[in-house]
Length: 196
Image (cartoon, rainbow, N blue to C red; front, side, top):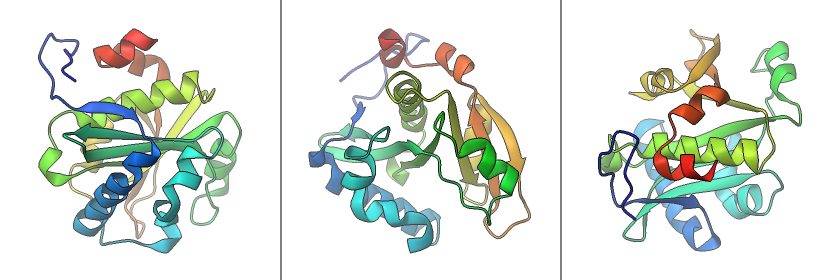
């Protein structure tokens, strides 16, 4: 699918879509590749949703998985799910702020190394935010990132986000953000903006 972005430039022929059962194998492969390459590998405590994407994102209410697909290969993922922050390791006030029905968590914004710098993560975040606020009926989109992963912190700071808490130095280099939902609408790729 060829689309034109807000600046009139041609974008990759990559389809951004809500995942189906047929996409799950490719999504898991993409996620595991990024985990192994960039994050030190799979950790059951943090990544167990990857073991059953269908139950976590396709079958669960108010949850969704999104994929970027080119030539039937999943190049990137992101997901939305209800927010359930544990305390500890998160401060109690942070868990209380986001563990409510109106808040969701944006997770698994991961792009295969060879597909980076093509705008896929931005497009996925836009698509997921539209879904979260319009279909999921959330009013708050929370996320955290491991600032130790090359490019992760810079990416989120380049997006319409508001920093909520920087817990560094902690063992995970965690920075917590909220998507500035009103501002992201002005920066959506054309395809997502047209559905609004």
